[in-house]
Image (tube, rainbow, N blue to C red; front, side, top):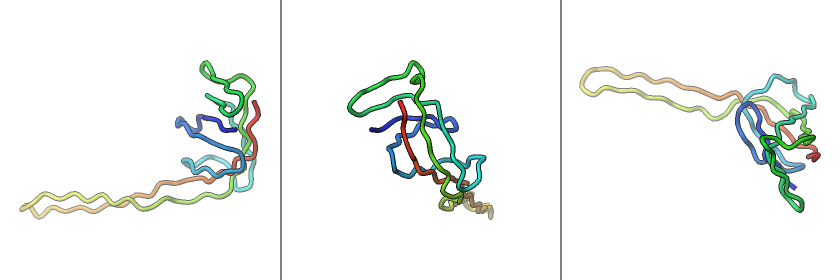
Length: 102
């Protein structure tokens, strides 16, 4: 069984007992979170939401917080002596999907 859920404005495909990396959430490590914006549930019985599936929930646990890979931004204008290097790392949260209830 799998589901498509909206978390922080983005849609993710989740399955039970799997891990998911999303943008940073306001929750401590080890906390349990439930998401109720379930858009689709697939498997043996398919349920499509309009816009969400009524009564469906995704239960998950916050594993840890971290940062993604560094993204380098390099700007240069040739023959002008201008070069600028900037770096950026996304703040991420790793979730463990416990259960999908329909």
